[in-house]
Amino acid sequence: MKLAILSQAPNAYSTRRIREAAVDRGHKVKVLDTLKFSIEVEKGTPNLRYGSKALSHYDAVIPRIGASITYFGTAVVRQFEQLDVYTPSSATGIANSRDKLRALQILSRHDIGLPHTAFVRRKQDVLPAIERVGGAPVIIKLLEGTQGVGVILADSVKIAEAIIETLQSTKQNVLIQKFVGESAGKDIRAFVVGDRVVAAMRRVAQGGDFRSNVHRGGLAEAVDLDPAYEKTAVRSAQIMGLKVAGVDMLEGADGPQVMEVNSSPGLEGIEGSTRLDIAGAIIDFVEGQVSFPELDVRQRLTVSAGYGVTELQIGAKSDLVGLPIGESGLRAKDIVVLTLNRGHTVIPNPRTDRVLEVGDRLLCFGKLESMRDLVPARRSRVRAEVRSLEG
Image (spheres, rainbow, N blue to C red):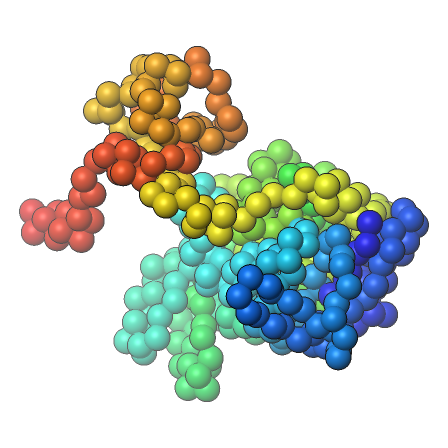
């Protein structure tokens, strides 16, 4: 396998370890400076140049994109994707994970534990937002902050209001987040590769700091994750479109609370605390995917006019309740069930004899017109809320 690592820091621990793991397994590997690429697009021939030369073929690329070059870095990764070069971290996944608010928005529609978070711009909306997330103490976060920088704990509402007003006056985007007191000063970092957690550590803050990041002096120790934490970490990475990710979680009273999904997680702290070859796990996974990569369904389906992917919800009044999938008539309508979601369980490629139940969610591919006919008329949420308030 010929592998490229996108990194501006070839001597950084993580880049070095990934390169060493690839070489140890007999692969050809080069560390390429992300900013030295030139992207060229024209009809039918996406192209990449490195420096002044045409880029040779690579089987896979592992992005280590710094936060300061996210836009250009994701553009380079996207171009590799157009060239059918496998990457464990999609350009969309990297971009989504870098924006803390966008990441939380994406996760919020799924059954993923999250600290209650608010985002406001007007001064008069700050106090109500603080109260909605549980009141003081409250966490204030800059959207662009990394490694614990731009994360502030405000002990009182007045202090929180002053900090937010000051930050907003400098054109900073600020999140207001519930302070999970039972997890103060510690968090969990789960390292996801593919569909499993390959290592996990608990980070504990030192010197009275509530931020547990290793870069800020926090101590790390290996930890055996509860299955609920493993499942949450893997699902969060998958939802974000990342096959390699560091998922940071708080240990809340109600279970795992996802704070962040990191698309370029560092290896030094977690390899040091767990003594595991995580770089090797990454290379082994990438090697297995190169011969059989996943397709970007959103792009491929554009050539199938009138067809697409959507999710169908089986309601209490649906005619499909109680019928096996094979007798539901979906296939006759040119609809194929790809995945069945039932509660917390995901059933890929469900058997035709599986009986449909109320609350099932079917991820389907098929004729959009046929699927549209199966979706009940959408009730206006705003009008429903108005009627409720008026009543």
